[in-house]
Length: 323
Figure 1 (spheres, rainbow, N blue to C red):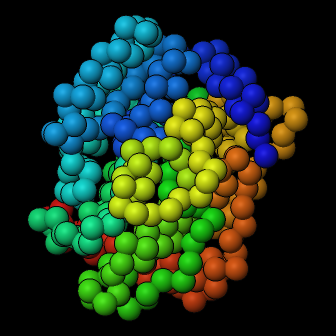
Figure 2 (figure 1 turned 120 degrees about the horizontal axis):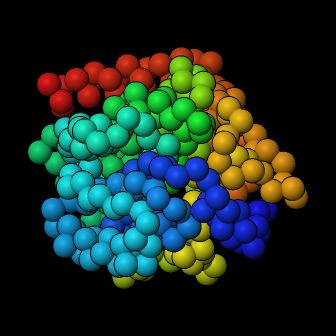
């Protein structure tokens, strides 16, 4: 277990990193993503920070960015307006970044929700809970690879906040859960997690300098948690505070413990060893920052070529939604 004190000491050293870090936050209008954005902004110096908000959240998010500009004016804060429940909107995010940047050091993704009220497809004909947690995240990584691979002095880092290590077998004949009998809010969560890990591993194998962390933060006191309680759900009695989750998220994003290529970010704390990668080459991490092994599920899926099946299915879907 990585103690909160270790996390905080490491995060305080972010200010010593070279100036000019470029980071993109997708999902920072509330919850863990918002706390991570605030933590990163607090500790960085002369960073260029981009965050994404859908139209309905622009006003409140701009208020947050205004507060960050006052608390740390050395950074540059940029708001990109896009709806990440639509795959076609992800390309707009890439265009916004690529117009101004030649590299991207950190891609942080935490957008998503549990569709407790049932499936209500977007105009693209997809379940938005799966789109935000899987399709749009993979699309973002793929679109931004040229910028990520141009991060010269650092090993570029991708953080996906969902359920790394909690992968389960897929409904292999209905990957997008099109059949109403196959869809449930829980099944959509399992598919998003498992397909995410399988495709992230494929990206990592093809981009050996890229460090990808798939983090399961466990129950966290976020607006989403509050909503689940209001709907009669009974989450565990222990829940991590949102601020602690944000600090731990930025530790994952900036500490060399989770780097595949030497890092170049904050050095690994002396009391900790390097984290272990999954069999497919990414970091699956538990709430406390430790590597987890889910080869019980993942090795069999890779052995049978299900990772390639998921990849092919997703690329065909991307082509149909972004043509």
